[in-house]
Length: 287
Image (cartoon, rainbow, N blue to C red; front, top):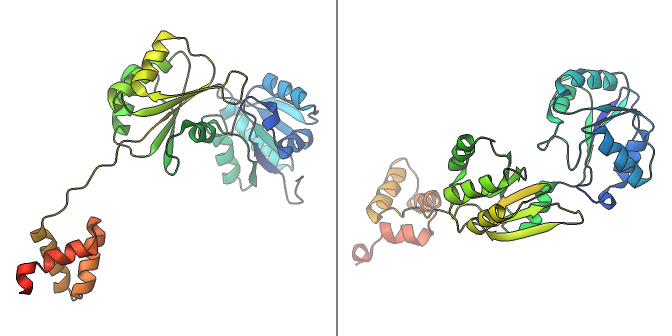
């Protein structure tokens, strides 16, 4: 991929979480050929390039929370001028609790191409390692820093049935786990993933109450991702037979056949068709 005849392009680069061996060939190639590399931490970028034994030929600029509002227009102008601009954060995918969203939005609004060289993500890595359900999940990023804000957010999530993924800072993880255990229940299964792909990688799979006690007793360090099981599915109350008969009758009154009405009511309430049929045709009514 290079400069396009009709303009430049913005490419988001997925960076290794810790192990340089996870760097993709496209990441290496793009860092070597980009006209501009915008990095969350330029020192980490230079260290990564050294670990990968590559030379960055383009201009390196910083792009982090403190300057992204000012620097975004500059980078969009560079792309409009025909430059290949690469965005890389300290680890994982840009825009996922890292700088990037503002630049992507501005680039799209300016009508310039945006693409990605996908790479590691702490969200999906922790989810896969957690041993918790992965078919449906939601990413909540960092919880609010204040205790009141954090507890309020957790109360809003207490009934969420999907697996939840959070990022948390080491110095706040004990308080966060205590609030999680108090709000979700001490027995809710969870996993604390620390220093993923690094030398001291650690994954603790325990109930929230045990993880909260562990965090208080120790001094967790490094990058931490929390994965928490969703709330148990609530069992909907099964309607009374009289209510099922009334629902079928209402549909029949609109011209729906009884067969189709029974099927529709069964689908609406998540019941087997034969359950609704038995309510509409009780044994006494068939004698």
